[in-house]
Image (cartoon, rainbow, N blue to C red; front, side, top):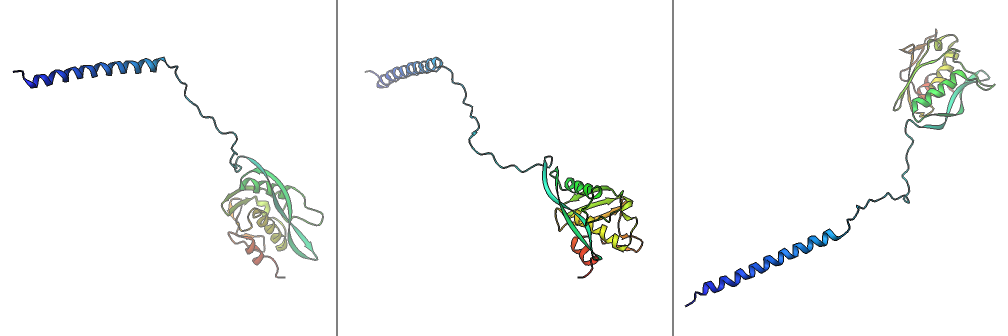
Length: 208
């Protein structure tokens, strides 16, 4: 009698052999198909030139133009007032640069015929820096020379108002020759540190 287990083994081996042959043929066809195709170049996406460019704010290194004001003194019937003169200034987009140019014009240009400057000739800006809402100005010693209390008040107002032309709420720290300016003139005009427009108007301008 034949062993039925042997009858089952033979067909299984035959099926396994046929499957192996089919897999090998399929792999060969796949390889041949893939190698017969022409290679595809990678796709490179180009930027969309039709979309609008975002708005870019001027960087601090760029030169821009702004309208600032420098301040002079006007004497009307013995009453002194501080008046503004608008000026166009081109400078780097930085508060320190703009204020430096404004002070250069204040100290070197001449006011209108009905205005004057109480700042003594020869006064220069030794150093000017800004830090947020604070403005630091170091003036040359000429700033304290000559004139009485009226002249001292006028020149102080010119400096304070010109220094705060970009931001009227700024605080101004004044020094002369590298030392904080606490007293101005022989009559001892006391200067608060820092000084602001409201402080100047309260302490130094006459009550209407």
